[in-house]
Length: 592
Image (cartoon, rainbow, N blue to C red; front, side, top):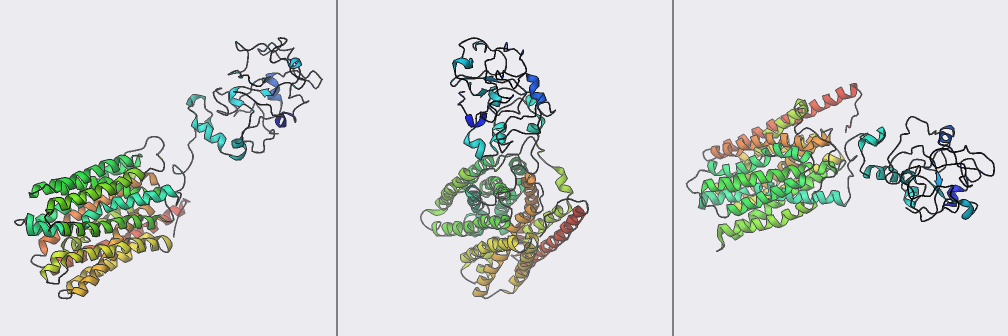
């Protein structure tokens, strides 16, 4: 390393006991130095002079003003000997200093080194008589070089950043260098930026190809009952969509810990391949058991990988906008619930038939899933090892009540999405196919607007309780709609709006009660497993009831949503009680 001469650095020391300009006639370069004096000879100084002086070397990023520290001594206990690999790689160790001419590589450590002439040798590069009265710039071991760069002056974090980046032996590092920074890994969420919004885009298409397919299952239910599986009951056919929903919600309890250890891209790649493979295999199915395996299980398990990533990636990038961005992302499922039914309904009756209608859906899924495969990125990998499953999460009362609310909510919420077409056909209301589209169109603003309110004005739990209560009332009002097409259209828009808020706000509510975001994937996995159990019950039970009693199925839908509302309210009060208990113990709170 060449050390350019820097008079601005050395001139304040020139002529003082700490700057040697004369020849090193009294040194044998192996430690036998004369003590410096203020005389004209001003010879090199002894190692002990560092301990006796109060002069401190200048550390870029530490001594910010670049003036000698007036209070630091080299015999302080915090100063440790350090390796000599790389400039500024460690704290300064007390070393001797010599003179080094321009263009000469400094020795790796103080003392005599083969190939470097002794300073007392006449005519050597260190002989200041041969190179001018002022001598050469001060040279020190490589790890404490005095040369400065603009980054040292302008970037106060350069010392720390370069220190951390260099591979080191932990035994040689000072204690402060090995200390972990306090707080969550990576600091607070950035709440914006290109990378953060790309995660929203990726999450949007993950929802598009998970819940979007489930929201579109109504057209498959109608086609299977009328054409492909005529001998099967509505309840048995609904098990295909039920299994898709179940595995989509249940498998995240396994995928969540994988997300938490910093591997979301693995989940996205595996999930995308599984969903596309399941769709393509569905296009070849002709039997009930084949549809169970392809559309029910394969798409469901792959969708679980995508769903846990879509819900867990955003809280690490957003805090004040968390509910809003989760709502925007979740609205992708509503668009999928509009696009996929239209494609299937208009392609399937043509000469292309069922097979190519499903394959076109698979091609769209392949194209749209390529986006999250590229853009999804963990903000920070958790440092060190962590538990695969943190059992302490299960001891939190508000979280357990929220799981119960999710269970009841998913029991009743999707009954209209599965059976609204058959309801319209049974009552000769017309526009059977479009009723499912109206439900999904209504859920687009339903996922975004309540989420925005949950960020801006009220806590997500309060907004979730309000929207779920509204969906409960609409479920009971559904009983009265028997002969009005216009009334059913309005009902579909309204129910889609209020029920659509459940998916986005349910995730935001769980995130709002999470202190350690490193466990967010595990929490979402547990919460969605509770929802999976609800889905496993809801649609088959509804399908078993409505052939003989539509009011019975509608009442079942309303009753389960009422239970979900009660649990959300109970969760709010339990969480407030927990916050008060933490306030009494002095823990930091974040209340709205």
